[in-house]
Length: 417
Image 1: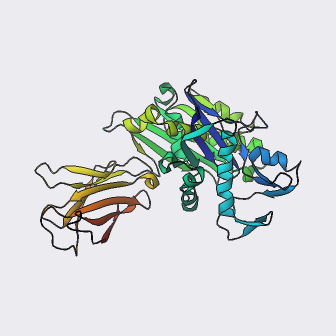
Image 2: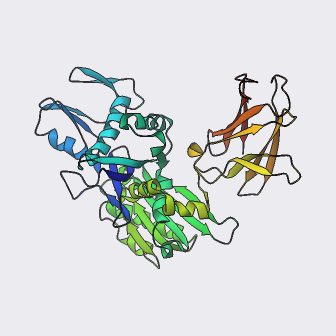
Image 3: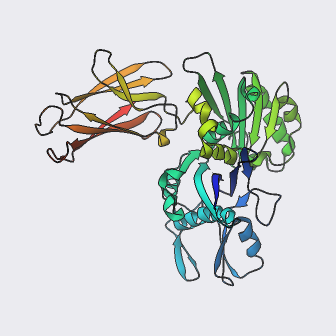
């Protein structure tokens, strides 16, 4: 019998981390490097060995490059948009091909540790939305030979929420602070929980401190970095009552915090971990009870849609039928609804803003459809987003079976919420 895995992957520019759901411990467990049990950070480099005619990735690539003849490939993230090709063993590769190879090899390097292993669900967490990376990763299911719905792509922010809200509830009775100190600098997220609202709400406030705090700015001057971070922590700590602080990112990997530790620990618990995002992605992969906070709360973030979009049935109760519901990331928010028109060529689209309660209505007239008997025209309504506030409703004529074939006409109604 094959081992079945729910896997979370944190895919960054320099390193990748993996975690899998441990059924016995009932929590995600980080995957260490095969040749170094002390680290979970797997370098994003490839090595092709001419001795073995084999590709290596991560820690194995770092090790093999010093013991075997071959070719090292790095800078894969930085060159994703490049048209340059890399020639290895007489074969040309684009950086996009190398990127996909690297991602799959990272996963395979874990699965190979088991005689028989299958991926039940894989959630890949990336820093932020990047169209090219999302486009590439959306095809990963083909390389892995699994169903498309078994792979999801999400963000660090979403993964952070999954991690935090699957910790003991006393840690998020009040606001929660998340500091992410990556190679690009410091970003701060304050997660406020409003349980008295209807619906109950999780609101994430983002502050960009990359100009004030970056590894390149301070270099080896960890004293000044500590002083600067203490000022930020003290300033942000006065804005809300914070019950827990989570620190993640390579910037927090060294022991430089002294003054700032005293500020952070005043009346709250502090956690430092490089694996918050990979474990959060793993919780999302398992789903079920681990996504309960998304069902219990309406989640407001910089990347989430804040409105429900649907139609009215034009009945006495003015019944609202949603096509999509807000509270999820815009790039993962899709919806589709089939409607049979009843003696009309008009459809009323309704947008309901969760934050303000404001309702907006737009009537769309479907021009150019052939005359058909009443209730023999079926249309498909789909919603897609280009940003948290912008998108389009796409209306397709489906006809009505063999009697009234489709015209294949498509109508697009763009909106701004």
